[in-house]
Length: 318
Image 1 (tube, rainbow, N blue to C red):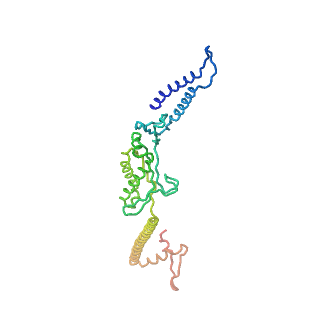
Image 2: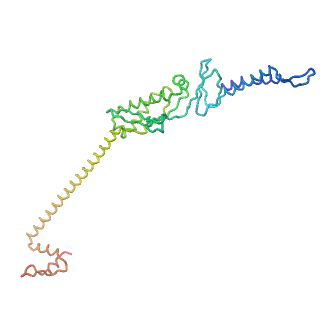
Image 3: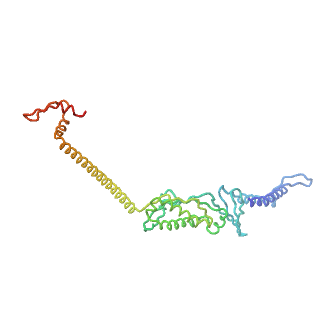
């Protein structure tokens, strides 16, 4: 904004001076002081040309920096840099070079999906070896932004393609370093959140000292090779089969225990019956009658014996 004010301070008086010169050149009078129509003197044509050139320079020098952006301006004569924030600014033509930077939060994604990330139509996910040397595929998203106070440094040392030069290599290096310290099942299991936190810390330490502010890093997906996936599936099937067999064995053991208990109960019942028979031989008749219908009162046990059940049935428990 200061440059724009300086530009106006210089440009406005010059424009007013040129306009005044043009008006004086057009104000032609005769010997009696009367205004007469005259052609364009050469001096007026030059003045108008200078005025048009000045207006062109004025228009071409004014730049509007969008919201959330900053413009780095380098003066090739004084060899100095200045930073212009969002709003109207002046970039002196011919002697100035400028580069626009986005200061808002940006996303850098590396994914297997061709519709995501900066490199479309290719698998841009990151493959890294685990502690055992097995390869795992990582889909990752990094949210980051530039530190405005370090923007001129970034422009001088790196340039506008800093994501490909700095951020991408840093992500690849840190992920490979961290993943290689963990067994494959840790990457696959609940320790994934711990791994993500460690990657966050290491990438921030690596990049933020150079003016790249890391907001968040997210491990979006972890994939394995087809061979390892099949091995995992086979292991899960085997574990399920083992669990099923364990269930069957436990069921059979419980059934065997039940039968032992049942057999013990029957043996005890038989022992009780035998003791009752020793004490009362007619007890066997009672048990026989107990199984008969309530409507039967007399039975013939053989050709010579008729058994009256009335007395026995009267004593039969209700």
